[in-house]
Amino acid sequence: MQKIIDGKAFAANLRAEVQRKVGLLVKDGGVTPGLAVVLVGEDPASQVYVRSKGKQTVEVGMQSFEHKLPDTTSQEALVDLIDSLNNDDSVHGILVQLPLPPQIDEKIVINRISPDKDVDGFHLDNVGRLSIGDPGIVPCTPLGCIMMIKEQLGDLSGKHAVIVGRSNIVGKPMASLLLMENCTVTITHSRTKDLAAECRRADILVAAVGRPEMIVGDWVKPGATVIDVGINRVDAGDGKTKLVGDVDFASVEPVASHITPVPGGVGPMTIACLLHNTLQQACHITGKSVPE
Ligand code: GUN
Image 1 (spheres, rainbow, N blue to C red):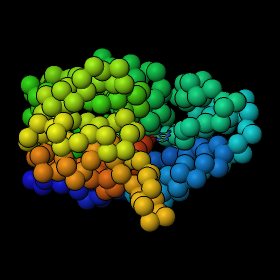
Image 2: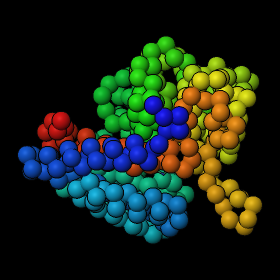
Image 3: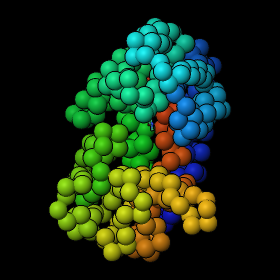
Image 4: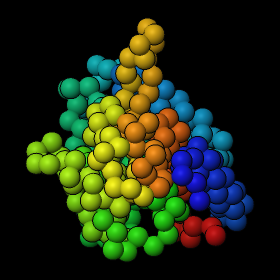
């Protein structure tokens, strides 16, 4: 067991596992999973993610389809593209990179993706399945977190999990996953009265608020497992910028029993989980079982 959870190594193992299963699916099932990623506009961070997704998709033996549209794209044009991807048999997963430009309604677009090709787990059908504990596609970031937590701690029954942040992408699905593991779950947010006191009760603390280094050592119970979902770019003081999480690593690391660093913790797991979800959907759509 490691104190500093190596998300990079964990993600490399998961990718290797996906690659092996894709190989079996191609060989025995005649199916090559295909992932379509749609990027609207030129947001630099989104461009980096999309490039990285495409590269890793190909590396595990899947087909990658990239659709780059100008930031003036109309909602109608985007919906038409999604309809054609929904009807394309070589595409098993569709991801529309968020955020979208203001003229486009995110909810309409996300729910236009066939739930059987949704690899983000953002479609309402998949959100509903997760919230009642049915099998389905789970959003990539919380899926990566729960995999790492279970790997470190094993059985989570009866543990107190505290989540800082109530977003639809991380906080809420994270709560559903931890509940399914029989944790007692508290979700905290900007109106929570005594956030430090709530955090101090956590055996498992998940920080997903987007506030640089907000959670400090004094807020953490000795021996807690701390999962830092934050990716914040801050001034490094030398004219450059650096990435930090929502957790103040320097003060929390000595108190925690396990902690994810930023970078190199949760981040690398997200794309690995996207590949995992694409494989799941390729098997689901084609009626094949996921190779062992
Ligand atoms: N933008 C930032 N993270 C994500 C993600 O997980 N999925 C999508 N579709 N867009 C994002």
